[in-house]
Each structure stands twice: as C-alpha cells, then as structure tokens.
Length: 263
Image 1 (cartoon, rainbow, N blue to C red):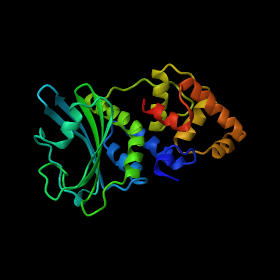
Image 2: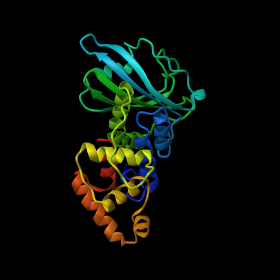
Image 3: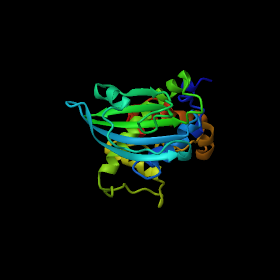
C-alpha cells in the first residue's frame, strides 16, 4: 500500500488513536512530541520544529519568530537559533503565498541559517501576516525526503496545519476554563473534553450511541471492536457513524478526525 493511500485507510486504528492524542495535546508542551511520534511512524524524521513567523510583507522582512515547540534527536542536528532571517530561503516562498505550501530544502554543507545543513520538509499555512511552520528534519548523512514521502506529508498537512494554528492560538491566549456539559462519566479524557467542546461550539446534538461510536473510532477502535463492546452488529456501528457524520457534515472516519481539528 502506498503512503498516500495509507493515510485514508479505514483499517489503520493506530493512526487515528495517535491522531486523537495529537489533537488532545494541542496547546500543551508535549504537542511537538506527539506530532513527531505520529509522523515518524510513516515518514522517518529525526526532529520537528514548530514555529510562528510574523511578516512585514511591504518591507519583505521578518518581524518576529516564535518557537512553538520542538522534539526529536537534537544531538544529531545543529542548535536552532532564531535570529534575523530576512534572507532565509523560506521567507521568499512565504511572502507571496496564498495557499498552504510544502517547501523542501536540501541539506547544504555550509549554511548560515538554522538547521540549514539538514534535509528539511516545511509545511506552511497563512493567517494574515502570520505563517505557521512545521519543519521536519533529517541529518545530512541520511537520505533526503523521497517524492512519495513528500506527497504523503502534503496530504497529511491538511490536518496538521489547522492543528498547529490552534496550538499557536492557544499559546497566545491565557487559558480560560471552558464550561463543560454534564456527562455520566465522572472522569473524561482530554480527547473526550475536546470532542464535547467541538459539539458545543457547533451546537451539534448526537445521540449517546453516536457519541460512543465517534469517540471509539477516534481513539483507535475498529468497527468489530465497537460492535462487540456495544453488543450490536457491525452494520449498526456503520449506521451510527453515518448518522453522526451527516450531522457533523463530514464523510467517514478520516472526515471525523479532520472535524476534530477544525479542518
């Protein structure tokens, strides 16, 4: 199975379980580590940097760069120093962008820019004068990113970029305790809280069974496992999922995961 098709494979419960963990960690210190863990299973990487750039498009320069998180084998790569980067090759691409970008930078023997001696794949989104950047690295003594890997990361960026935007916004804002609806479970996982929060924000009402099925699938459960747990047929689980998907305005399990991140 190809990398690009495997991301949408409904028989990959581990992928969705790890995606659920990544969603739940948005706004927290371990967000970058969860992203590294998720992506490294499919595309080997040694390090991920998350950053937010604020640009002055009129003067073609960088106003500010904030590091939103970093995780990985830092001993294999040079330290990241965020100083003046008005001549950085990423800046030229980001100034005129309208749609999300994937920017590959090949390792250079000598580079004045942070991590410039490493193989890089950068995913970039735009919000006004801000750019959220996910940078994946490999040491120069490893092979660069293949076309199949770049294609897979481009596909995955549809989910990862909205997530880093949410992460950046959470870090900018002071934490506000959100009012949560009453539920029968006394203790809820962080993923459950995010799920109920999304339902509340969208003013969406799901039945108890529809909620159970959605949460079960988001945490890596399979249709047969959910059917056994709820003592129903596989077809009933699929019906609950279809009903929930229709109310959420999505299609299938992958659509459910993207809905969780607001993509």
